[in-house]
Each structure stands twice: as structure tokens, then as C-alpha cells.
Image 1 (tube, helix red, strand yellow):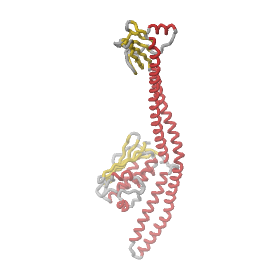
Image 2 (image 1 turned 90 degrees about the vertical axis):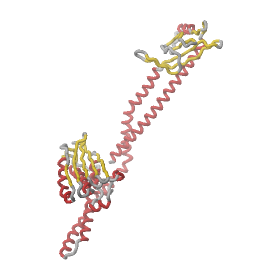
Image 3 (image 1 turned 180 degrees about the vertical axis):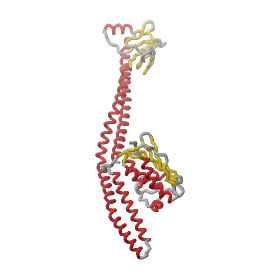
Image 4 (image 1 turned 30 degrees about the vertical axis):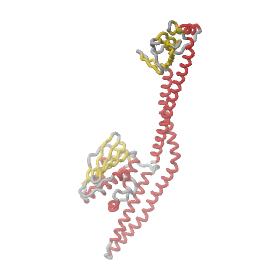
Length: 410
């Protein structure tokens, strides 16, 4: 159980770190993109301010031929696209890298046959003597910036599995350290339960032996045995409780070594049906075996028998005369499902989450009358968990319940 808790804590910690990683990566991406946009905008604005004084007006039309000639003679590298438009927004001149031949601001895109152009554009109105002469536009490609942003995204995605694995391992190790005191406390509790169960056996055996001797004496003297019967029932309940506590401690002890072997579920269910048939008939309850798979599960025969017996006993305890109980099994993927259904009193919805708690009883008066100790379903759950299985309950008040146990196939 503690090992499962460590795994869950490690997974929760891993999920938390990955979520924080995604939030941080998203924030970094947004800030990084905004920084690149601001940098390009500043570069374009400075370049436009630098070029603007070189614009000449010839016949009312702007030109940059002299500027382009001087730039060529000086072998200066123009990394941006410089364009001149007339006042009707028609392209007049174009210098530098290949840009997009239309007037616009901000991010512009244009698709070609095999590629796509992406630029950031800044333009300014050119006025001469208060009259509009045209527009100066400066563009710079954003493809490299986009590639840098995509690379950051890919790096985040690629890093996630490695980060998740490292965090999961670290979480598992540190959760083991954090849960060590709890594990020691649980181990002490298990030892106490087992020791208490063993210690109870001795006085119970003495009481039962004394009752038997007392019963013989009372018979010889023709005295009623009502009191001894009451004590005998109480002693039997104490003996059952001690036995259940010892068994529960064995199953839940992580350092115990169980004999695991292929178990025929069909044979197991048939044996349980044979054991309960006589008792069921005496209570006018129809106890039968349904369809059963021939496949085997890997498990401990003693534990699995106790599990099915407890489920059958629980069904018998809460089923009235004239009712029916059925046991069957079926394959579900890589698991074998063992089901025990009854037409008993059912379980209220608010009690379903507590039926596997120790000493919890849905119908306390009925459980006491039937002699239940309240540990039967707790033992069932412990056996299921020791076999890496799962148990679920479906029930309807007044119509019955179905307990389904799934255990991996052998």
C-alpha cells in the first residue's frame, strides 16, 4: 500500500512539475516573441529614419536612385527590403532582399508555389511642400525569428519526457524518505495486530475447553445450558475475529513471501459452491455456479480461496430466503474477472465507499445476528491488492449487489 502511495505521490509531483514547466515555457515563448517583434520594429524604424533624408522628388515622384548608387559603390549590405510607392500606393522602386510588393504595416505574409514569405513592415508617408508624394516602406524577413521560436517550442517538447522521468524518480525517492516514519508505524501496527490475534487464541482456547467441560457437568446434573451457549457463541466470535486479524496481518505485510502459482479459478469456484450449497439450501437460498473461464490466474491459492469464500459468505449473510447467489468468471483483456452476485438487501449509495473499511457493517443488527466480525471485505480488498488486482461494487437497495474482482491472467 505504501509503495502504491509512493508511486502516486511521484506521479502527482511529476504532473505538477510538468504543468509548471509548460506554464513557464509558454510565458518564455510569449516574452521571447514579443522581444523579437520589438527588436524588428525598432530596427525598421531606425532604418526608415536613416533612409528618409536620401529621398529625392523628381517630377512629383519620390526616388532613391542616388542612395542606391552610393550604397552599391560603398558595398554596403542592405539586409532589409526598401520600397518606394507613389501616392496611389503603386510600387515605384525596390531595393535589397525580396520582400512583399504591397503597402502594409506589421506582419505580412505571401504564399508562393514552394515557399512562404513572412515579413514585418514599417512605412512612412512622404510629403513635399505639404503635399503627399508617396510612401517609404522598409521590410525585414521574420522567417529566422519564427524558426527560433519553433526551436524553443521543440526544445520544450523534447525536454518534457526527460524532465518527467527525472522528476518521477526523484519524487519516488523523496516520497520514500518522507513516508518512512509512516511505513514504520504501519509495520508496528501490523505486528501488533498479528501479535494480538495470536495472544487472543490462547485464552479463547482455554474458554472453549472450559465450556466443553462445564457443558458435560451441566448435562450430568440436568441443568439448562443457555448460559454456556451464549458464552460459546461469544467465544466463537472472538476466535473468528482473532483468525481474521492474523490473516489480515499476513496479507498486508509487505515483507511476507507468498507462494504464487497458477490457480484454476474454475476449480476454486466449484469448491466454494460445494462448500456453501448445504448451508444455502438450509436457508432456502439458491446458490449456483454460472459460466466459468478455463483460464488460470497467478496467485496464492489459500488467499484466493479466502477471498471468494468471504464474498460468498457476505452474499449469503445479506440474502433472504427465496433469493439467489451466483458465482461466475469471464476474461476481460489480460485480466480474469470473478463475480459474486446476489439478490439480497443491497447497499445504500452512501455506504458503497465504506464497505471495505474494517469493522464497517451496512446492517449492523443483521451482521451481529449472523456472527460477522466486520473484517470479511477488508480481507477481500487486501487479497486483491496483494495480487495487483482491482475490486468494484455495483448495488441497488432491495435488488442485490455484485462484487467484481479482476486479477491478471497467469
